[in-house]
Length: 130
Image: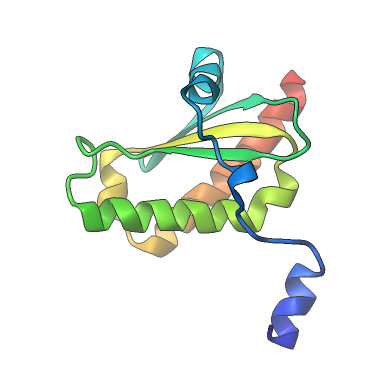
């Protein structure tokens, strides 16, 4: 690891193991039932508190919204990377990210800044509701 990068991220683990992913339909249903929601023109994020000690991420990138597989995969990689870097500030939330049509045409930098705003909003709103 580069020394400058190590200084920025410190000694925390920034991996994205399967424990940080929503994998079961029941987990997704729990999030969709009564979420805290944040929306912009690129993404809709839904979140609920979980009983675990870490956040978990689920993706719902619809083919109907983003037609091209290349664009869907790029969006998914961008979301996962953004989540991986912010996971330590998100407490114990289950989060589902839905992509909107404009996300398929947006540059990656714009998507990352949109996600950063969403992560911050969710952290603030979920603190209020907990």
